[in-house]
Image 1 (cartoon, rainbow, N blue to C red):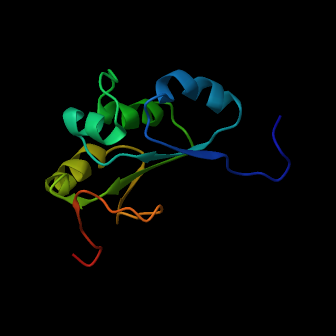
Image 2 (cartoon, rainbow, N blue to C red):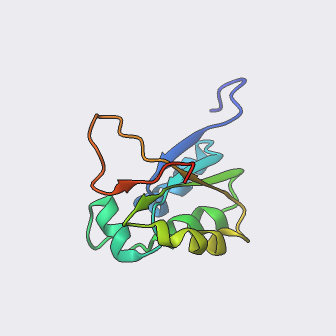
Length: 124
């Protein structure tokens, strides 16, 4: 059932369970995904998502929904000095021909804690 007047159903995810859940979510009306992806390096990806042995490369989290042709796909990348600032051009190269938008965003500590990495601000 689709709710009358509802145009977009979206989720935000790190992509770990996306392969398994995406067919059902799409059937339920999902038409937009926001993927939080801060690195393209598999070892860093496991560190960030705090799960070893995900058997999922960081690139796969983007390629799976991109190939399923969802209405809208966005990737958010939090840029952190000492972790991934050296990957910005890699992100651009990887995503330039994919049907998605990439946003490089600042770290936002919602719980009052600070990142263990030095924050890069947008003006930098």
